[in-house]
Length: 287
Length: 353
Image 1 (tube, rainbow over the protein chains, first blue to last red):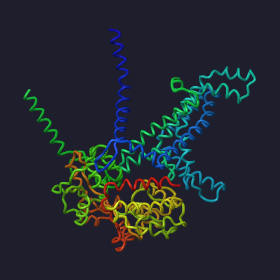
Image 2 (cartoon, rainbow over the protein chains, first blue to last red; image 1 turned 90 degrees about the vertical axis):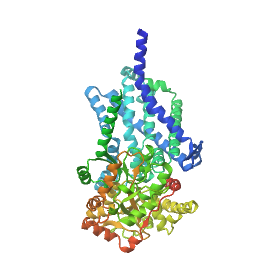
Image 3 (tube, rainbow over the protein chains, first blue to last red; image 1 turned 135 degrees about the vertical axis):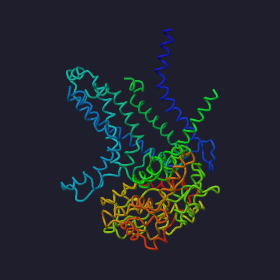
């Protein structure tokens, strides 16, 4: 009786998770997969085949776009880590009590508005008649208006800004759990700041670094708004390619295949990232 | 038991009857085509309510395709995109002409739209709003721009914008002396036109500040002076002209591209009565004039231009003399499959450096 009841409880608790997984993730992916393996041969005529996947590998344009997207996402991840680590270290180790909460909150505040609004904010700052260009002209650094928008740099700025919170949060959590006495002991044993960072802090923070990197990489790779709006004419991004296949080309078959390739290729990149950093997914996500 | 069935049936019939007299019209349209005051007038006169979703040609078709023609009761894609979408996806239902007050339409436009939107012997579209795309130019600083190809001129490098969509390919093709509409039926000839246009647009990319996406975006770029010449809709140019007399719409030497946005009924729309009521309502000359004053484009309503304000008429006449009107290239229906070729071309232009 008791075991029956606990079983019931188990299934009841499992139900929302299962419902979520099956209806919102597994079923749509099955549908998407079926669409992706149907090749169009004529008006309302389809055949089963892998032709859509072949298009990706045969047309250099598409896999180059993917490579570019992946490369820029990796660069974003590295930049975000380099920027986020000192911030997280400062919040976790050098501040106490109220200051700590305030600083943490200040990192959060920009995320109270939507991504679209934040991106438009950047457009106001960076455009030719925008704040930065006007300020530099006012101070005499530049002679005429300069366009800061519509290039890869602008995309990077936007992506780093959008994703830095997701790097800081796991880092603060793992750095918080590092006992200060370990750092003191390191200094007592004659370690320099650099060697303590390398031997004690980073190894301890590794799970936080890796989980932060995975989240930031995936967010950047799957971002649509920021690259399109800030990149302008140079905003070639893989998700944008998927959007155009679905919406402006009415080519759902190719779009679905691209969607699956994005899923597969990004998972592969994360897998190799984990192998390189000698971390396992259960280690990083389990903490 | 039997009584229960009967009473339930009565209830269902009563509910159905009440929903016939009062329906919610879910309208999928362009910004400006359903102004608030028109909706208020409509809701006061008929017992229907109106929900408006604004969109563009591609998204309209994509939305209706995703739901097999459900979710909306009336949509307004351009007339050249209807027959092929119907052929491919079957998302519309034919127009019942007996429920339309056809005397309210300009006969030539009604006839032309009917021809272009006929599939399998049935008519799927009624004309509503028409306009053109051409050049919007800051005439004080870039008066040398008189045709699409001039956008690639070095003198305005970095201050140019156009959309990366099919109208741009067609416009440039005409400006280069090619005949894209004549090649619609011949895929090989059309591909060779696309290849030449691709070459031009790839070379022209350095001139472009950015490819614009929405009407507000291009107006913003022109108003701020960051863009001096663009390929855009006539109404955008006239609206800017109100604020800045230097900026206006210029009909290109090779001909403005003319479009007609239509009414179509999605195949699984539920409020046909409200849809026909709406069509007959907005085609009244007085209502059509309100829409023209809001959207900036003229309608296919008989006498609909009488109530239009004089400024707009003056701007229209300033941009189009009789020769320019005669030179308008009206979009013929796009055959199915053409968009795939154009898509590949646009992708390559977008990817080039």
